[in-house]
Amino acid sequence: MSNLLVTGGAGFIGANFVHYWRQHHPNDKVVVLDALTYAGNRANLAGANSVSLVEADIRDTDSVESLLREHDIDTLVHFAAESHVDRSIHGPAAFIDTNILGTMSLLTAARAVWLADGGKPHRFHHVSTDEVYGTLGPNDPAFSETTPYAPNSPYSASKAASDHLVRAWHHTYGLQVTTSNCSNNYGPYQFPEKLIPLFLINALHGRPLPIYGDGMQIRDWLHVEDHCRGIEAVLLRGRVGETYCIGGGAELPNITVIDTLCAAVDAAFAADPALAERFPHAPAARGVPSASLKTTVADRPGHDRRYAIDETKARTEIGYAPARTFEQGFAATLRWYLDNEDWWRAVLDGSYRDWVDQNYASR
Ligand code: NAD
Ligand code: DAU
Image 1 (cartoon, rainbow, N blue to C red):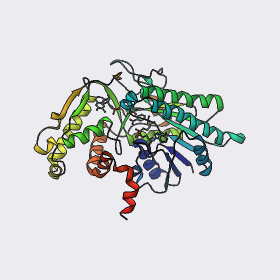
Image 2: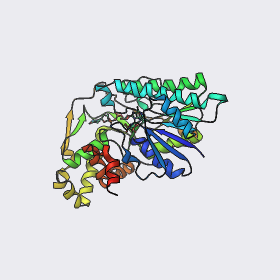
Image 3: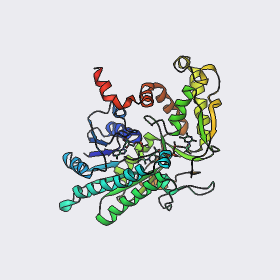
């Protein structure tokens, strides 16, 4: 039996992890700590039974310490972060504050609670990114746990710094840590500023699909549920002090992802005439290909060209392998966005911020 504290559990991956954990470990206690920034959404946790959501900031060390004690937490899974590269280019300060100082605050609280008086069994799992390794050339070997760090954006630099802090708290103080560095996630509850949900929703509204530069940047696409399984494998079978790279085994150029998305939207409209009534501005509603919305825009400054993950260590040591192909994962994701229009409409119009009031007022 474990008592988990999930930071950032109202965000995209954190919320998927909470749903996953409730389903697969129903006897564990799950507490979510989330500051509910623009990316945090209480609605993401709807249906997750017996989960307490505490609205607090990871930089508030005293509150974190109190939570660890009050709920007798033995496992902290750290997702909370500023996560969008484009935002980090426009406003890096929030990334330094949350991702670096916030992680140090959690480490400080964990050390105070878990290592005092001879210590108690515990685990601090840090969720990081493959972006800390920088960018790959077309023929370079994929990133692995031994690839030197070379972050290129304010976001990835802040995540790299947080990884180093986690490592240092293990080596210096003996905190029982693990870290996972994963590739690009996609799936339910992803905030529509990231490529896949942004382009899906734009295609449904007949809005341009803004492709940065030549669209030949490569990412390794990981369905969020596979990522959750990877983190579970690290928690259950990973070695303390180690890092694990988690990928989706789906290295694709952006343009291929975008063309797949456009073709899938067109096929969905062809198969279901009701979609044309729900989304009359979609080109697909008139039989026009969604790909007609593709628009080339200026490239992202410092845009990394290619990410890829060699997951040999995770596969051989902890038995992790992605369960879905990109085609399967993407089809399920499209279905989810079509079936959950209320969720993304509330995000687009900002009303998700009042979700609790709305939800309970109607009961
Ligand atoms: P997200 O932006 O969707 O969610 C972040 C969550 O953290 C939100 O709920 C937000 O309210 C919360 N948060 C932000 N600042 C906080 C603070 N100071 N205190 C408490 N909570 C705070 O992010 P995501 O895409 O779910 O990513 C989760 C983690 O996974 C991040 O650490 C990110 O770096 C990492 N990661 C993401 C991806 C990806 O593709 N999305 C890939 C690799 C790694
Ligand atoms: O690799 C893991 C990282 O993946 C995570 O650490 C980050 O938190 C997560 O945001 C993601 O970063 P990316 O920058 O790769 O994701 P994003 O969805 O923003 O962009 C994916 C690719 O699509 C990237 O090459 C930029 C491009 N893109 C993105 C947007 C939003 C476009 O061409 N147009 C767009 O409008």
